[in-house]
Length: 402
Image (cartoon, rainbow, N blue to C red; front, side, top):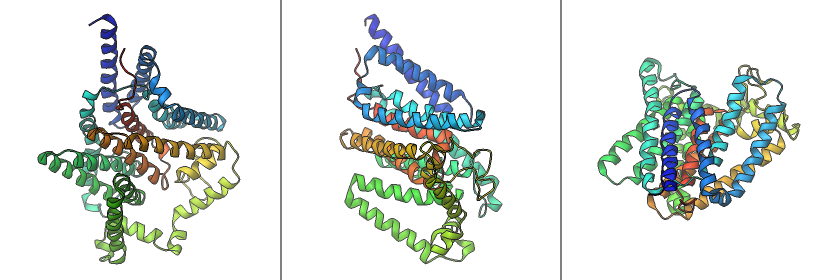
């Protein structure tokens, strides 16, 4: 082995170890360690690109250009906002640099095929801490669990989004592995996560998860997609049409039934008022908006203790402007198409499931973004784009060793 080969192997191993450490700290609540390591990884990838060329970046040049334009516009909205502060910068940096920016830098890296088999087990392992916190939360509030919304040591909206990601991780891992013992373990994992999702009483996740499942199974096989859609709609119809007494119903079903099952109920729901205010503001918004996360630490006009508009697109239009909203929509559509093409051309079974997992998570977080502003979910947004990056760097058309 010559000197260049040894240097390449050392750099590659250093990147892999750094990624493992990064994922470990990403699984924990809070802390800046994960961000420091992600900066270090981006630095290592820069060296890797200098040594090996930029073939990966050239393959994804359209994705990179659109993403950079979007990041520039978001950055401008942060610059023009009146009040900044460390908290707002933390949210901004995780909505841009440490999520989308991290993904873009990783696009030029090629993960060797021999490491692909470890991706699902590692992702499952890093999810255990979060799931454990949810189980403890349920146990500690067992006496009032019918009315209590679990938070998993964070906030309910963030925890519901995180559980949605792990639900799809468990589902696709269960489908992929053929060993019956592993399937049973993963089936239990998936059921536990699903139960925790119900205990969050999150209307957003309860609606986004079925919508994502229908879309994903339609992508896999449109006939199966129709069957899944029929089953899903039948189950949801049964929950609302033939409920038992209100005390015995699933609490999240009560929340949905009491808020969105009729025009009158929709208008009485808090989110309707919040959305209407946001839409009116969006109509009068400038190209660059009022400024990134304008109302953080303050209140919107229609509600106290509410500092955003509970919708990615409305929030973007108001705080980041109509121009940024347009580019944001283009960014999402383009990234979805790129991920879909990446999935459809894949022949390897494991890689195909990893790529389908990434698409599922991307679709879910954006469906969920119709009810919550998900780009304010710092750690969750990092996790989403890390998994998307992984789905790209397992390609065989990446940069080759020299």
